[in-house]
Length: 203
Image 1 (cartoon, one colour):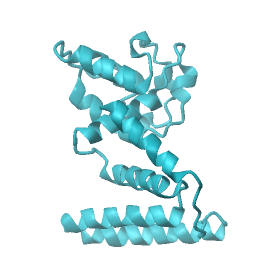
Image 2 (cartoon, helix red, strand yellow):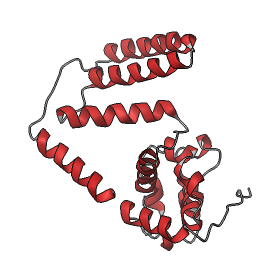
Image 3 (cartoon, one colour):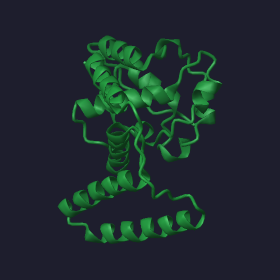
Image 4 (cartoon, one colour):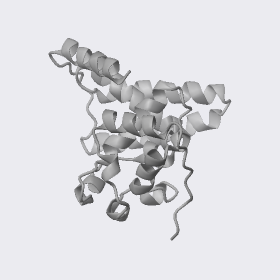
């Protein structure tokens, strides 16, 4: 299967590549397109055939727009199969996370708003309490989803979401996988300080 053509943008290429390398800590220039990562990507069928090696190539060639917002960036599940297979130990999961953060900082409209909402609710819950409380963070996620659909006047999607999540919640409760307790961890201020420090370093 032939891969899609990528645009080479020589102007901002070097600075974009350097930024992604620095922020992700991954040696992108060591990629020689062996495609071992592509063969093992667990979400390859869900990303319009955009595999880790193609994403790396986008960054190397300076295709900033597509690199910051594509199906792989939003659907990567961080299974680290790509890095395990890579002969140069390139962890694409860290690259996708870096690109996601860069896109958010630049106010790029997310390709998958639901995933962005889920990610945002999860991180904020962890920062607030030091632990992720399932009921609290899922409530925040569902609120974000509902508000977005209200703005779009898609009320049917809200009803469908409530039905689906209700069925899932009941099944998880039956299997004793739903945790209703509320937990807080010590050292929450330290966690928040680390997050502030990481933001400052990324600027």
